[in-house]
Length: 279
Ligand code: ARG
Image 1 (tube, rainbow, N blue to C red):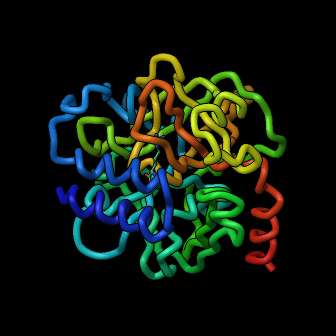
Image 2: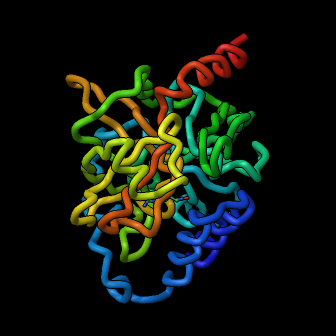
């Protein structure tokens, strides 16, 4: 598959966003893309450190890709979460350079090479107006209005910012050994705002970002290609969407947690866009 192209799309998005350190971190990943996974010494296996998503585990998990030639696997470049039958929540940095016609959503199968993948066109796109303010990557969220409703169970959004215990994240991003065809998931410990601000001085906006990862040991994280996808917490039998994969320095490195858009902070703004689309 065309990994170079996938990297280029992501890198392009980062550079276009005029990011400082986050873009540099991505560039680091891109430079390492053709090297064996262990060349850098700090990667473990899967999403980073996880395993295959099972059928039905996260029905709302979707891939975001470009329309056209090639398999869904070859065209996927970000993740997303279905939050209403015809609405997907993703990261602003995944789509800020796009118009709706540039985007398709892959749902219905965890294996992007499977014949069961449903490809759906995007009819409308809303990028957070305050994306990149007050700091780079603040408010990293966007909504996609789909051309057709999906036959997929949506995930509920977190409404109050909280200190979580255990979180789960998932996607088709880099495992450290390349891009998997089957979505991966991993449990990641919650990192407090205070610890995250200390890890990334001046780059974390605790209002709109939340952090997760094993600060001490590394080894579990989301990574390039997972952006836009969910970080979730269990609430009884259900899962609640608490964040959106956004950025990090490298992936799964000790001391450098993953940073996520904090859904509870922009819940109201999301509801407003949804109401507008319904009306
Ligand atoms: N920005 C990346 C993407 O576009 C996601 C990076 C997540 N990094 C991390 N260490 N958790 O796919």
